[in-house]
Length: 287
Image (cartoon, rainbow, N blue to C red; front, side):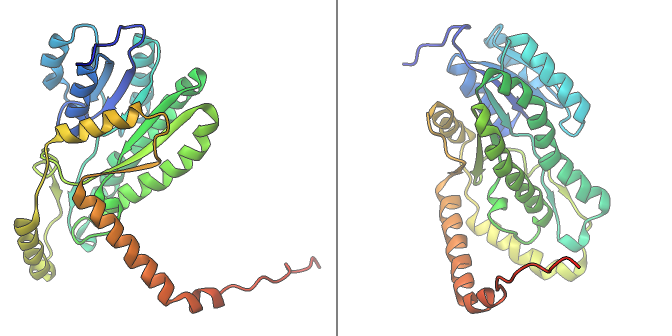
């Protein structure tokens, strides 16, 4: 059985969306390991029981990650409270479901605000602290939706694609400061993400497609306990050489490889066209 860390040696976590779902599981796992946690959420009341069970090791702070100034203020409060930050988990997220054509401007911007701009603001806020320490690990909770675009989750996928592109650049930029970045791509877990989905106004042109999707989900949807994702995360942050990407779950693992193979086959089939579109020539001479 693992012996809890002392306050002097325990790691300090900063977790967004910590009050429910995967964020809650991550928070519990870190506390059970003897670490200290700054758990943030719009509603932190669900964390009261955890704070009572782990006195002095859980600091619950209200935070809307779409508010950039609030993010910087809360990160500053967190770092001042525990003296450092070691593991930053950008977990807060939202799912806006609907066909691309159906999205209002407000809905599209709201989806990107939470899933992309939220982690961007957190990353900008924590980097000065991590750089000064010369260490740290930023974990970006992405999704199977970043592996490809799927009907009815186009804007969700767009937000996760954006998150991953930004995170790859961040990883290369932060590495020189001793800061690591990992993109975690989970499959399905029993959380309330789908229960709190914001849906677009249905366009009847997509009724047939919606019926097909509902049938597929009813036949093939199998989710897992968030506890298993938390166990994987604990192994990830304990690694001396964490990967840039980590798939969570057999389903998402198989989907990732299937999509990659399909793309490679398509690229190979159009290789002659691709190569013919490039021919190195000297640059135009100055007049």
